[in-house]
Length: 324
Ligand code: PBG
Image (cartoon, rainbow, N blue to C red; front, side):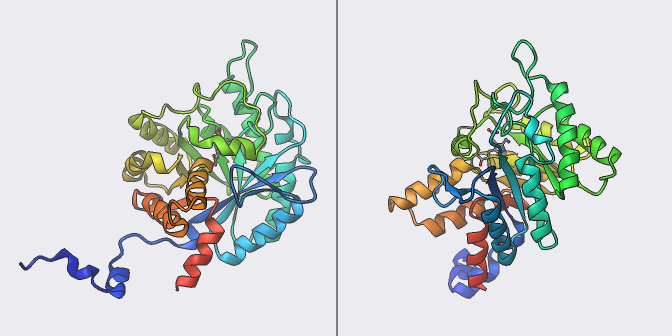
């Protein structure tokens, strides 16, 4: 037998050298929740190890993130007060904008400061957009809110705005608003293929979401593979700088499809439920925590993600450094 694939699996050095997918700290982005009006971080029960930060603890967390050498942080705001149009999102003193200023001045040179551009954290009904009088989501009125959000986030120091609301035309609308306001250098990350997923469950606790109803009129049906690619193509045409697939683990086929056609970077979001499942199984001793985390991330990279948003970003970056 001349052909023996096992030959290259014989020693740790051979295996390490022939590994086809590797993780690097720079490809990891840490999502961070900052809550208004608290002095000490509050643990999120369904995401062991993840907290709602105070401004102070957020400052500490982003310094640790920069120290660990990850690529960036994605900021989410948890405001005290919510209303129908999500006023806090466009208030310069709103928690997300304040946190962005703090984080940008703290670590803006060391990593990429990114902000979630969506209304759900700020609306009392919990939807990603504003509502029409019949209770439906008013797509085009929402775009006007997103435009203002984009500009205020850029002014606060965001370098990459994460468009996660799944409104039609959101990339073009925010791109135009940024350009008109003199922020042509601020990039857009389009959550191009964002599915209506049960795996966002713990996130709703993380941002104290009060969602009434569901998001199925704007997020994608889990069974729709081609539609994920279509959304990515539309966002690329509208001028997105990066496209994302979300969640990651259950949508690796979509990720692979988008990676195959995209000429711009393709990212994936390993969401709260993916985090919670591994943490819960590991806490029960049912799987090996570290191996499972690394395998989940390598799988997402292998499917085509150039970078990954993950709540384990800093911990994994530190493991990768130990390994060197
Ligand atoms: C919307 C948003 C959501 C997540 C990130 N951005 C929630 C949703 O669409 O319901 C989920 C992230 C996660 O579950 O980790 N602003």
